[in-house]
Length: 146
Image (cartoon, rainbow, N blue to C red; front, side, top):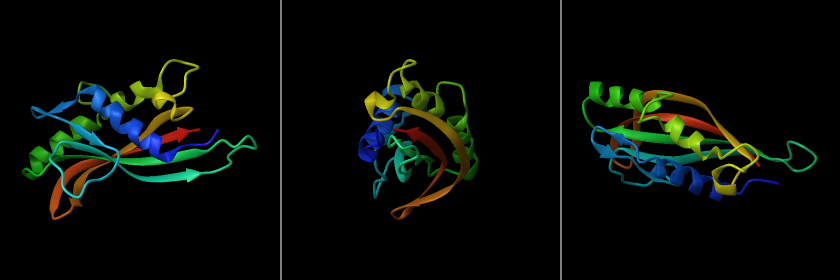
């Protein structure tokens, strides 16, 4: 089948937008790219690694790195907010928002952009530089097949 990398990125951002996640009273915005300037909390699709021809039928496997930038506030608040979003459960769970886009068994994930997906890991919190600003955040790795 193969993967349309751009369609996967757009669908991941849409999944987080649809979840309407709030952190510290602010709704998380999401983009399929990392902007030069942002207002936290902001989810962005970053790097992508695609391994072609994992089967003779042409199946691709990809790892998508996504980042959630949560705060430019003090270190304690920023790190606590990042950990909340990194949780596997709860109303602020990015994992739950992304995995909700898997669809029902037998359906393609991400609105048809991938065969399936799973959030493999989350790492952080740490500081990320975006443009001239530093933000506390976490990094998610999403495994997709197509």
